[in-house]
Length: 516
Image (cartoon, rainbow, N blue to C red; front, top):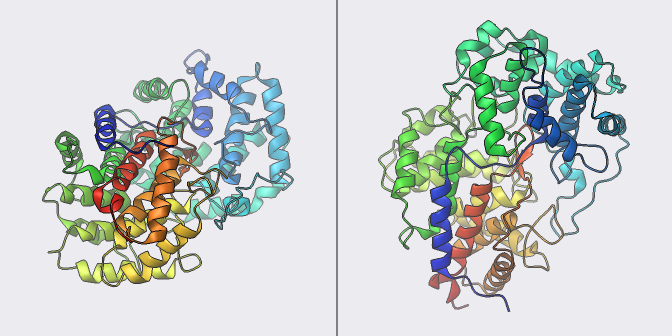
């Protein structure tokens, strides 16, 4: 029999987690690592030979690079970046290069073998994962294809002519100098400019830590075009914290701190010392909100809303009016000029508004978010989001945000809870990417069920099975990459906080001792 969760043990592990937070802990991405492998020092030697070693040690059996869960755009973009790096290196990776080019040829012709399906009752299958878009794919892939063509790699370039046209149109639609004028989302993906980069215009946008857009790949791209000691120093730090490769973003201290506090929120008032972590987040808060990092990025509504929520929960007098500039006609925008809308941003706005009963615009904003969430549901019961490949992330947070709120609970949270109950796996976990479940997806579902009507017999049984599932895997911290950036990634502390917080919620008396 699986041991029951020990609240004291969970609080102790959460305390250790809080004490470990720094710039952000994230899995390595092949895409960013490939860009570091292309940087050469003055004199021509590789500036980061460990990056090339990482690539050669992490190629998939089918010749591709990317996250362990096959997502078409992630694998395509990462493999393009890797084969360009290998060809530029010239020697030492010929077999890996040939396998990567063969994969790309098959993928671009639509001949890649079918992805393994997650045999679950959930609705997403491999064909849905094929529709997932990584950040700036339509800009980054054509730029890499131009490099591949110059290097005379044998690829079916005609298969992406439409994507190249879209890139040209999007670049052409930008106002002159917009990319360099001030902090903006394009800084995070500067490598899409290719030969069009103007280094002297980019220099003023370099952050205090040496990065461009807190992106290892964008920073490596600038360093390739013009050796920059501050940029290279930043990249050395990335390699150090990533263990030889490069992560998708660094630092992401605002995002990590806010989401970790959100994850362990159930432990407030139960012995977890949170003051220092809350104070650290409060110190990052600005009058116009926050970004995922304090290092030179434009503010966004998702990070702003969740930081607002947790700061208000802990008594910080932050102004909810900071949400107003992100409000659109029908929903809240994550940032200006975004290509795809973000469901989770709107969910987190609703969650933040729960903590702001005195805010004069609260009622109107909640109605707007409610209408938006009503219209964007899949099957009328759950949601998908552009920042995460699993619907359990955004659906679980939607239940938390809507539970007990007039006009949102019955119409939005109730059907979502029904969907969670229907899609639990035989193992007791949840997942759309693994037939046995994943700890992360299970944590989101369990946390939602524990906060919403745990007195129901079906919910109590689902909570019990999910708790057993997580307790059997409590020591497992090798989380699959479910979050979406320019590559798929796993923010380790964020996921760990969600697991610990969900288990703590499940063993509280109001859940554990609830009578049907």
